[in-house]
Length: 278
Ligand SMILES: Cc1cc2nc3c(=O)[nH]c(=O)nc-3n(C[C@H](O)[C@H](O)[C@H](O)COP(=O)(O)OP(=O)(O)OC[C@H]3O[C@@H](n4cnc5c(N)ncnc54)[C@H](O)[C@@H]3O)c2cc1C
Ligand code: FES
Image (cartoon, rainbow, N blue to C red; front, side, top):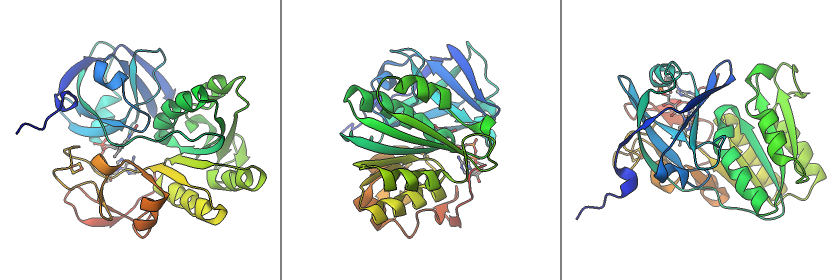
């Protein structure tokens, strides 16, 4: 029996526009009917010709109807991607994976680095459902704060707020995103914590959720090869992140908490300590 869906069919897409977001992060805008219907938190497998196929979250496009991915220049595939120009093509499969679910009321969102990409898509939906968002964006330094101005514009008139934190104090609060998150949890009645970013940050956010008795949804990263639940490279605890994640909620996060923020796998499947994101 052929269990493939249209989403599994590899397509070529053309880069329509590139936005330089920070010195190391770019957003690529393209058209793809399947991915424009993606839910927040879902990802696509991006084939960078001559390099590799890597997972990327669907980000918030600058225009309704377009699709976007927001890429950090990191290793071979992302380095090659970040050197591509308007009009060039790359391959795409998906969207794949479980999305965030929408929570009503007042929510806390914590984003670090390109973890802001799936959160931006989530915010559009949360605002459409009249949720109020307390967003904490963390970065090492002000030039690496992703989507700060864009989130502020998106939140205008909604009663939502954006707090920035930087390790060096060059913008917003000096310190960790999770320190500002604790302040929000102490002051407000939060119904859900959403987080995406470096895994040590997510581990701390998860522990805050446990301490304050607030449910969490977090989008995790593990190496992905097939994206289809076949190869096992994306395993965490008993879960395959490509099909059962990448978004896990508190009950599942509890089950994987020993690995969370501590251990991942390398490309051979060997367990290795997690490095923090640059
Ligand atoms: C569901 C999902 C969604 C993702 N969404 C995005 C996204 O929106 N934008 C984005 O830029 N990336 C995203 N990633 C991460 C991205 O897939 C990897 O950064 C990518 O595989 C890097 O490929 P590469 O060839 O450039 O580097 P690789 O050769 O894969 O990596 C080189 C080395 O750096 C380490 N490494 C790579 N990326 C990271 C990282 N992000 N943090 C810490 N260590 C890393 C690897 O372990 C390896 O040791 C996502 C990953 C997953 C699983
Ligand atoms: S990436 Fe192959 S099983 Fe998840």
